[in-house]
Length: 257
Length: 248
Figure 1: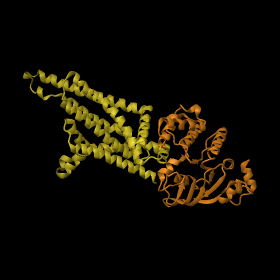
Figure 2: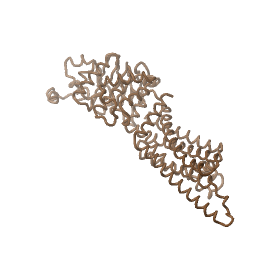
Figure 3: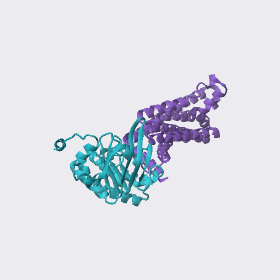
Figure 4: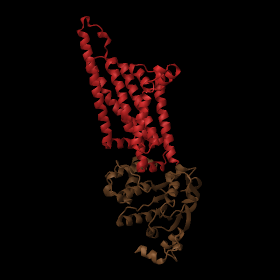
């Protein structure tokens, strides 16, 4: 446990003494703010137009949760597709490149501890990013009254998706020895996974169901709408475990080569 | 204490180290010599449990490298060819991190260990600087500090004096001698005078095989170390003149 904490702390320190982490964080918040503002502006415009109609037809169709918050949280997940690879690509490739991997491996630390320590470091970083981005929807409570439960389950969806993406990124990083390769591979893998359900409609049948199950977009969509199912929780949990498992295999391979 | 038995390592078809055996006890400073590509680094990497041997085994600090690798790791200090530093940490931060990894617990104990290592390797004036901003010589010394921070009973150094200036070399050699008094030190190097100055035992490895294992005293009674070295790696037809010429 102590080893995991030591490695996690070092990982965080590495993030925050380099400008990279601040750039990722501020870029993320900037994009998020832009999307949030646009969603809100569109919403205001629609509401204003609807209320000018005689008898204000259809005004009741517009609610903040559906029009602003859902869209915003889904956008956050898409942003994470691009930013998480930037966070994970360095995690293990850099150790191998600079030779510090040799230090870790010849210390009384297990490969599992190395992986967990690294992963925890990235998780902390993601928690900070998410916490900062969740402030925007909270602002709506000053002016309006969106339902709170769907907002919370939506935030959970963003968090779980990011954690799952990070596990995938860590696995790729453990198999690669170049940052570039790790980053690009992770990004492509995540994008493919995200839209893996695309041919589902035309295929139909069991395969469609399977493809939909494997898509983080479909799994997160339900949660963003406010439906937390055991199935989607299991999906994200197994993606995380699978990622960490492969990350461990990857390092083991380096250790025993 | 180190006992190596028939250690071999294969990379694909290439037999990098084949059937290497030697031993060193506490108080020994063993010079591990050999031409480039002879298998020095590979052998050392097996001893420090970085690479698994293809066959054979070794006992380091009383533990088997295959079956008790974690105990071996607790009791060795290892300086690889390029010092394994984290550029974004200060020297003190880095050494504290290594101390924790090596199993030292408690703030006070960690601080004491780090201070001792900093003092021993003459790093006082750079202790607050980032590792990435250090010169080659200081990096090497931080690498050495890292290897001794947990006071291991076996120390493995892969070319510890490369890249240092003459003054630093003298200091590091003195330090190695002092460390070797109650520990086992293995030191791989190309520099023969260094072996003569620091070591009391010599192992010469050539093309993956042990060419010679001896006490330094017995070895240099009749011939110079250069002669012995060249003979054991297969250049018998070198005359004394050439050797002294090389030295001049």
